[in-house]
Image 1 (tube, rainbow, N blue to C red):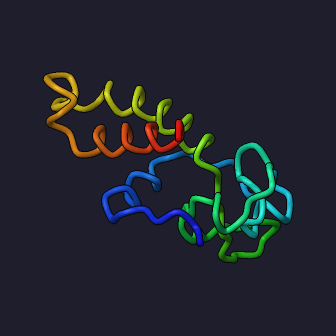
Image 2: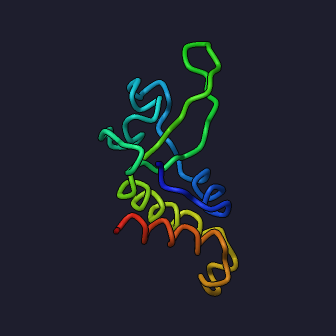
Image 3: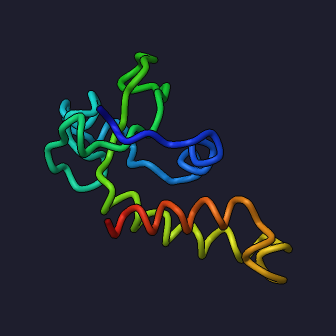
Length: 112
């Protein structure tokens, strides 16, 4: 079964920038391979990034990106820097920002 993510983390996962769908392989588009590194995924190792809608070659369709914990941890780390620059609570204390807390949680999960 894919790794479960709570509601707060589902919103944070939506902040992570995904590659353009037209640059991905069919296994990456269908969630059988990591959307970032291309490694094969199993239901036990995958992190579901949620159904997305994209237009590719003039056709609008749903796609199902998934990743592994290592990649999502790295992307969360990068997103934390982007987020913290424009977040007033983060500039005061990272503990005061739910988004920063959720990003750090994803980073920790990526190290397990």
